[in-house]
Image 1: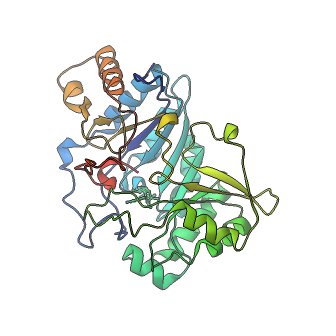
Image 2: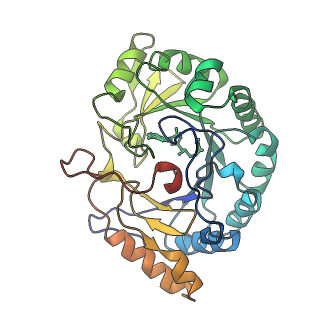
Length: 328
Ligand code: SAM
């Protein structure tokens, strides 16, 4: 098992397939993009499937493909198909900005993908263009609809609210998502942007998001027992069946229930989104480590997992890698 010294067991593996992205969301990347990881450093499709299979042997039951933008990875459908053939077969999802999803949703479902999370911060075309620095709102909406049609459900929609930009839009986003049958979740902005522009004093907090939602809807908390290790706290909206989630990583951290571990596109295992240390599985694998040795390295990395991400500690240091190069 992948267990840490606080008794938490990692069963959820987030796999970044690329650090590249076709959007430039202002809270994530500068307009000019970043210096991308060098090609030879990126794991091949075979290497990804091998590391996922070692993790599955060690108890991982959930695999989430992310990035960067995972739909930019050419081998995505084949990777999904190969991971779906593992025994026991893990549950699989993709976190995507939705661009290009309309084209590939059917193939992903046929390959064995279970579900998608699509990121969308605004329903306003101009705002989208300002926030993501690309005019692609229509592509994202088409991608979500295609995912729902292909049975990649529930389609979860993730939004980050930025003060003075889209923080007035939570009720409209929720109303729209309820109408479409999608599950809306709001994420607190985290100190993971490449530009180091995050400030606690200006981020939109979970309390503010909930205040704006309760002005428009009746929210009833879903009992904590149903949450398990899920990052989102959930509320039933207007008596149900619709729900809304808030992922309050900063103001209501949920590290005590964390079951996640991350593999970057260049083969580094991270036991936390905010970890400052990584375990270099790529070099070990290319130097000839067998599966047992790779598994031992994964276990050793988990044993070093800290009790919490420490955003509130006075000595908190943002990780060197931005979110896009870790895998969000
Ligand atoms: N490109 C894919 C997407 O857009 O979903 C996957 C990667 S993206 C980094 C994953 C999620 O992280 C998105 O929902 C994005 O909005 C969110 N994100 C990026 N930077 C963030 C930050 N600083 N704080 C909170 N969420 C962030």
